[in-house]
Every structure is written in C-alpha cells, then in structure tokens.
Image (tube, rainbow, N blue to C red):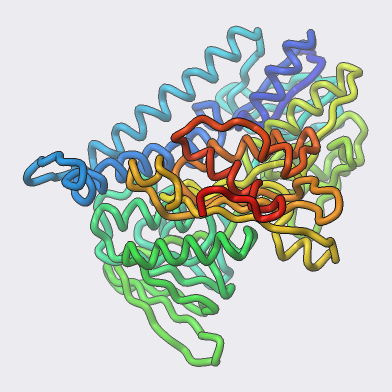
Length: 465
C-alpha cells in the first residue's frame, strides 16, 4: 500500500494547486481524479472553454458589426460553430495537458478513479483496478455541479446546463436562459452574437444580483442595446418539452402567469457542492443544510487531518478562491501561518463589456451603517475607450468617509477583468483613494479610469469630466 503525507481528492484549480504547493513544501503528495482528464470543472467544462467561445464569438461580432468603423471591409462574413467548438476543445486539451506536466514536474502521483474514505487515513480508489492508499492528511477538493430546480428534468439535449451549452450542435433559434447570473449571461451572449434570439428569465429584480446595483443597471442597459430580452422578477414554475419546442412557464411579480417558447433552455440557477462518492459518513464529516462540508477558519473539517476547499465549502464558487484556499491548507500543513482575506477575492463576469468587483458594494456599506464616499468615472470619457470603440461602463471607488481607505472597487468596461487586480492590490495594502489618485497611470489606457474614479472620490477632483 502506497503512503503519502497528503492526498488531494479532485484536480480542479483548488485541488491541483494544493497538490503542487504541498509538493513544493516537501510533502509526498497524491492526487485523485475520477475523470480521464485533470483540471476539474474550470478547465474542462467551465472557465476555460466558456472564455474560448466568448472570444471566438466576440471576434465574429466585431467582424460583422465593428470592423467597417475601422475601415476594414470584409464582404460576406460567415462562421463555423463546429470550428469554434473544435478550437475550444483544443484550448481545453492544451490546458489539461499542462496540468499533467505540472504533476510530473512536481513528482505528484496521479490516480484515476473515485476516491472514497475507508477511514480517516485510508482512501479507496475505485477504477479499473481498485486500490487503497494511506494518507496522513487529505484535502477534499471535489468542487460543484450545476444546480437545477426540482420540477425541471434536464434531458441534456434541449433542456441543458452550461456543460451541454459548450458543445451544442447548432445555434439555437431562441435560447431561453433561466437565471441572470454570471454563467447564464456569458453563454447567452455567446449565442446572441451568433444569431440566436435570447431571453433571460430571472427571479430577482436585477441581473448579477450579488454585485453592485450600479453594475447590474449598466450591464442590463448594454445587453438590451444588444437586443437581449429580459423577464426580471419572474419565478419559473414549469419547463416542458414537446419535440423540439420548449415552453417555460413563469409568474411575474403581479402574480400573472406568462409563457416563453424556444428551442433550447439553459438552466443556470447556480451550482451545488459535489460530495457524491466520498463516503463522508465513514469518517463522520459534517455537512451543512446545503450539502457543503463544514470547516473551521483553517479549512479543517471536524476530522482533524481532513481539510476541504473550493466549491465544496461555503463562500463564492470561484476558481481563484479555491486556489488561494489550496495554498493556505498546504502552507498550514508545513507549519507556516498563511492568511486569506475573503473580502479581497475579486468577482468577474466575462461578458463584453466585462464586469469586475472587489470589496464591499454600496448596498453592503449602507446596510452595515458605514459612512462612505463614492467616486465614479465613465469609460466614455477616456481617450483609450474612444480609440477602441469600447465606451460602455465605468469605474466606481468606495472609500471610508473619515479615513479615505478604499472599501470597494466596482467596474464595467473593456478589460476590467484584468484591471480589477489594481483594486485588489490597493486594498491588500490598505490604500486610500488619495493614494490611488496620486499614482501615475499611463496615457492612454483603460486604467486611467481607476485614477479618475479615485480623484472623484477624493473631494470630487476628477480631471476629465
């Protein structure tokens, strides 16, 4: 029987990063993955493939709608969905092979099969050849699966989740998206660009409801400009399929039942922690009412040598949050004292324009009774935005009214998924709005909007509005 210092169950961003850091710190490490490829949801059917399709569809939309503005004449532009999906798969394959290389490089043993607990230090790996390994410590990183509603039957043909939406055989005529969160909006925009009619049905009164209200309003305005339809404050009550036609029944805020008909329905109502097959009962690991594994501040379960990270525990279901947690557990096992500030985990929506946030929203500050000031700067006032034609969006900085410490940064615009790192860095070092305002930002850049928003939050000193 092989023995290890650490066994990691699950090879998504949290799991494989945890394994690498453990190996770097001198621990003999194994990783267990039930699928034939490493990388988990993010690399195989999540973050990476969705961004590949977003980029491909964005290029197509630019070609048919915006190239002429730049003096580029192409004639009759066509696309091949088959080639787009093949390219997407190529990106996925290259990325997952990269994880295999990292496992080899760091001398991490990889086991394919379902890992389940026999007891606190022994894991049975079922596969072609069942085997048992011994581990002093185990990190559970099994991630999440798409959620659905109890009355919806997912046939994975026309009533689908994000997994199936990444490999459709055709562009839908009318795609109905149930859920106005990140996944639904991103994939909805992919198919809208390719010619589908898209209707988003959302239970809440706004899209991306966990982000700042100003971001929700701005993105809704942009999507409506792009001819996406929205039914907000609508509770879905039934989804029925007859042949190739799907009927979605919903009730609006006045109690009136309405129907939407399309040929595909994307159910994107969130994700649930995935613990199937772990045999948690064998070791007495506790879960909460949403199926997430209970952990303490050190990501330790009630069984002292077993930890859990990523989507399988509470908190935002984000790949980079899982990575940070994986590093934290590895370093704790090595006797170090790492930290993680969950307030500084950024959130991003990869639509175009992109949406990005870190820290507190304006609503959260109001609810907490914090006295704050706000500075906002529109992207349309930037020379760089006008040059590229990406004039939608803004940057908003929230700062403490007394100390001027930055409490939140919220952005909508071109490349803000990358730009939000400036806000994270500033807040990690407890910067004030004045600190950001005094920093030189290259001209012309999108980043100038951050400086201008900081100036706006500091005695309303923005220079270009």
